[in-house]
Picture 1: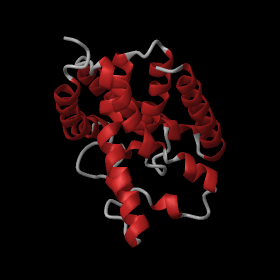
Picture 2 (picture 1 turned 180 degrees about the vertical axis):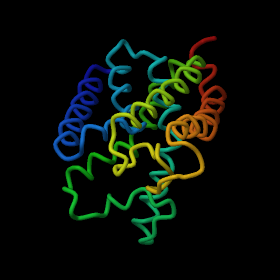
Picture 3 (picture 1 turned 30 degrees about the horizontal axis):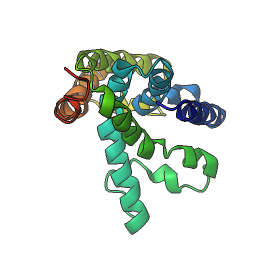
Picture 4 (picture 1 turned 90 degrees about the horizontal axis):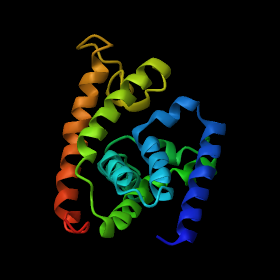
Length: 198
């Protein structure tokens, strides 16, 4: 990987972190997509660590794809089919904050490009599932329920009432692993399986 790219990527992540920290509460960094970006920065600098990059790929790929579909549809039609990107069109939010949110659009292609030659590390699936579970409980304990980070209190900003609040993060993490991690893992195993030379 070119050294210039490493420096550029690290500069982007550092600038993103500073801008987000000055606008959002620190708990915002607990979003899975934000954790994925931070881990990717370490994966890039640690001798192109394909294990860390593989974890990042399955953590963010499908959520970022849905984000891209939502923001693109809203840009073209004015409608948010998934309702997750309205903030991108909120003029009350500084334009620089919204600009750096385009990391959702960029991170997955970067990760696929980096792993194309290195190969996907199959060990990423169980580790990422445990990471999501830990992340969801950290969010539950540290974040304000009104911020709805990772939706560990209910979907789409609504408080869930179908199960005890302390059990719901386990349920949500399990759903995330099945719906987002597993399909991406299967696809990565197929698409990138021969790139590592094994």
